Amino acid sequence: MINESLEIRYRLGQSGIVYDSIATLLRLAIKRHDRPTVRAHLRSLLSWLESHSSEGIEDPIRAWLTMADAYAEIGAPEGEESALRDGHAQLMERASRITSPVARESYLANVPANRELLARYLRITTDTSDE
Image 1 (cartoon, rainbow, N blue to C red):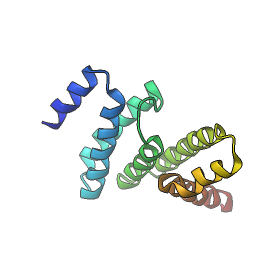
Image 2 (cartoon, rainbow, N blue to C red; image 1 turned 180 degrees about the vertical axis):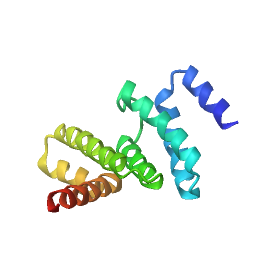
Image 3 (cartoon, rainbow, N blue to C red; image 1 turned 45 degrees about the vertical axis):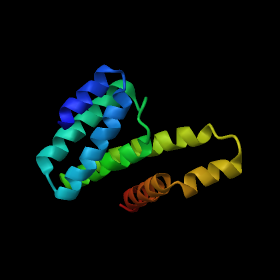
Image 4 (tube, rainbow, N blue to C red; image 1 turned 60 degrees about the horizontal axis):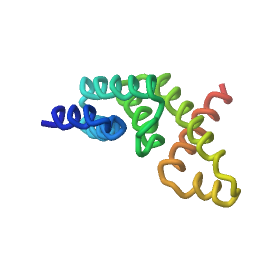
């Protein structure tokens, strides 16, 4: 039923919504520790991001965090780090479009997904520089 719903949305041109849904399914698979499903949904999400960047995805920063979590679940720390770096790059690009310094700071500090990505990015960059 889920795949049929996703296929209909995809055919209707709502592909961004499809990948928001896949990211949600990925989060559920991570919570269940269902590694085969994590791998399958991770591949789907990566395929979308490689071919369309984050076009149409409602919460792309959360998608990058979800991918980092998926890599952590399957024991691929290099993938987790890569997802956090790519997510950070996108977050900073999005933040750079906000002209008001106060609004930009609020966007980075007060949106939960943004705040989480920044904290996790800081951890990986701090850990890497300490080696």
